[in-house]
Length: 350
View 1 (cartoon, rainbow, N blue to C red):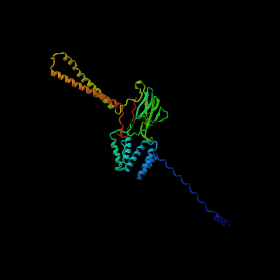
View 2: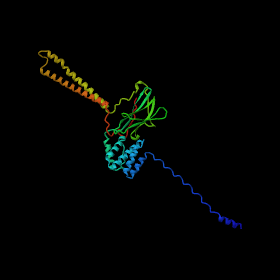
View 3: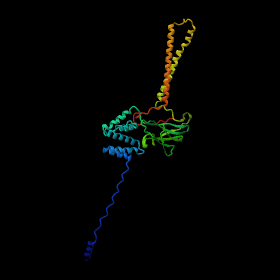
View 4: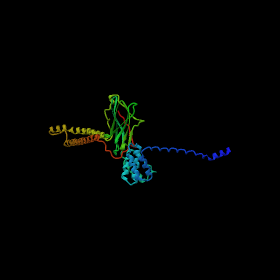
């Protein structure tokens, strides 16, 4: 009987419940893509052959603040390729010229782009072959014995007027880095140091504070030390012998030489004057024949003409040299930093 009751109870009991389902694992959050999101969008649209959409995305990418130099170059590259694809030759040339002004050794991948897309790039490269690129350099510091007053950088060449301002990082001793942003004035920018020694590096910025060039780096900064004596004192920017000034010095030197030679011929011409006076007093003249006298007079006149011509040439050369000394060379579009990409020249002189 008890066995029957137990069997009846078990039959009436509810069936066992299934275990609750396990909670779903959280979906990992995708990392934020590095770089310029608009540039990444443009690259995808370009892969889909949506040229107009890619062009709009690149315009937004170019307006994104603080693009690094690699991003700036990539944007110019794709803008040029898309303009060429849309048969906008003038725009393609403009984009490629800006690209090559920053890096004249930049190359397009021949396996990626067609001959039609590369044609304006090659044309822009040929048009820039005879001139130099944007050049960003360290200029002579302002210092006096025991004190570096100001660090100075300059844009030695900016053919397409791309540079806008300079971002400085300065550090004195082991102190933290101090930042400052300074607009360019006449192609130069400076930041106060006020210490016996200073480390610094600087970025050249263009539109939307995009990085165009760099001198120094955080890992390898430029180190300036104040001069120790009056002989090595720097009171301002050093003598700049770039641009037209070598030609100015050459012309001025030629002018000096011409004036010296002119003086020689002038003295030769004037040497006959005492002889002419003696012949006038001698009646008749027996010391020389009329033919010989005329030959001497003709020779003196020739020397005088040569002297006058040399003096005139010396004046022209001197005036031209003076003008060239004070006039900067014309900045023609398209420069090349020399052979091999953007050249950053660190020239620290005390």
